[in-house]
Image (tube, rainbow, N blue to C red; front, side, top):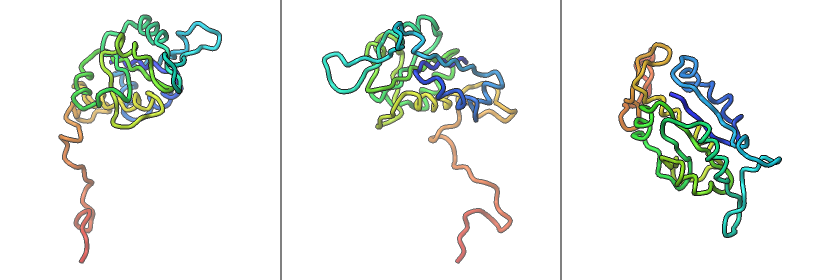
Length: 189
């Protein structure tokens, strides 16, 4: 699977995608990550990606043009997900569905909002992590390693694959081995 991440902070992912499950999956050739700097798709000397909201109001809104130009250049072959607090909550079923695709493109917003034409004209999905607001879509994009856990493909590092069986609803609570004293968590007295 190829994962494209469109962001104004590509360095946010540089180290994060080399750690844990995302890093092992990349080293084992199961996934490739492509971080795209939206500022590369601007046409002014300041590399401006934001503008005032139409009709006024506080805050700045991310312009649609850099998103549209980046998507045109990528020509993605799978879901394009805008990460936005107004989206529907990302669920395990979404992770399973997306894990079967050859490619996933994540659109990371920032500032007050993303011009809604991005959601209407580019996104196949608009996801939220829950009933709260993050400072940007980068944090939400970093959580998408959950999709990797659902792949019905060979496991990383030779361990049996969880192949989509892992979710907070379908896994029994994990424990460690019993201690020499007869068990973990026993109370005396």
